[in-house]
Length: 282
Image (tube, rainbow, N blue to C red; front, side, top):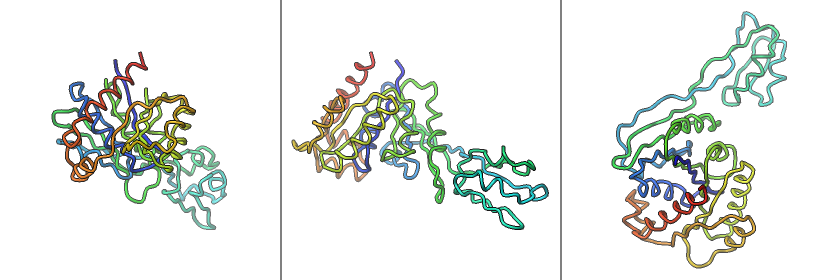
C-alpha cells in the first residue's frame, strides 16, 4: 500500500524534522523517500547519512519587455496585483522578486510586447540515504520570497514512490499548505505549551480545510498537556503518541547523532504511530 505522510506543525522548533527523519530510520526496510520541503532552511540531510547528492535547478517565468514593441501604455502595471511592473515615461521596470508568474501581463498586453523568460529561484537536491532510502530536498535561493514553486518541484520527486515522508516548513501559511497538499495523512507535531496549543489549533484547521486526515504527536511530554488533549478532543483528532522530554535526546540531536540510539524507546513510539496511521487508512 503506497502512502504519503506529511509531518507538520503550526510553529517551528516542535520536532518535525526529528519525527520525519526518525520515521525514515524506523521504516528503512520499506526504502522511504523523505522530502525536505522547508526550502528556506532544509536540514533533514544533517541528520541522515546522505550520499551521491545531485542538484537540479528550479525556475519560474518572469516577464521580459520588448522595448521595440512597447508603447508604455501602462496596462501591464494596472493588471499586476503585486506591483512587479512599473511603467515610466520611457521604460517599463520589472521587479522579479515581486512577480508571481501569473501571466496576466503577457496575456493582456495589447502590443504583444511581453514574453516570459526563466528565472532560477532555487534547486532540488536528491541523494541516497545509506541503508535507509532516498532524500529530496528543496532549497530556495537567498533573496527569493516565493517558496511554493520549489516545494512543488521537490514533491514531484515522490511520484510513483511507495512510501513518502514530507518534512514540512513551519507555520500555516502558503509554504506549509503547498507541502501538505495531496498527502494521505498529516502528522502534526506539537509541544505541551500555550504557544504549542495555539499554533496546533491553526494547523488542525489548515488540514481540515485541505480535507486531509491528521493525528497529533506531543513532543517533549512531561505529564502536563496545557490543554492539548482538550483541543484534540474538540477537533476530533487522535493523539497518536507522546515523545517524552529527554535531555540526552536533545544533546544527541544537537550533535546530529541518531535519535533512536539516544532514546531507544523512540523506535517503539514511532512504530506504534505508523501502525495507527495505516490502520486508519484501511
